[in-house]
Amino acid sequence: MDKDMIKNLRNLVGWSQTDLAEKLDVHQTLVSKLEAGLVELRTETEERLYKVFDDAGIGFDDVMLLQSVFSASKLKAKKKDWSGVR
Image 1 (cartoon, rainbow, N blue to C red):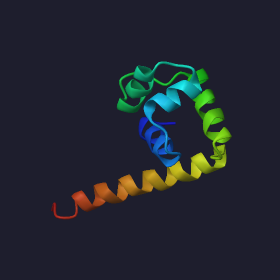
Image 2 (image 1 turned 90 degrees about the vertical axis):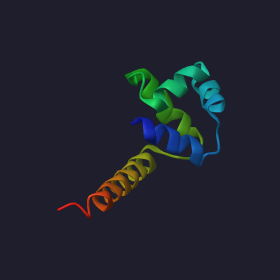
Image 3 (image 1 turned 120 degrees about the horizontal axis):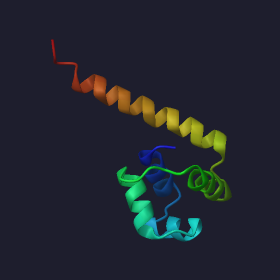
Image 4 (image 1 turned 30 degrees about the vertical axis):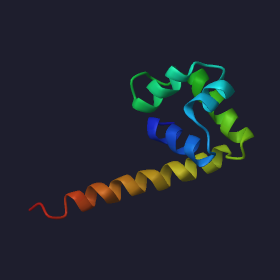
């Protein structure tokens, strides 16, 4: 799960960084640093993220689908940025 996905999922369920931190039993600054890409996501934290979002109604398959949609959107935006370059 990448940093943008964490933030997108958190926003999708309407949680603040503090809300997510409480559900993960970590400090809010860790969530902030994860979303900013300042720290690497540890396997056990990633597993807890999947569990927390699953409990909120967003299962693993949903996360994978959303990840592909967000990735496709990023690629489309990059392609658009380069459309005028020859």
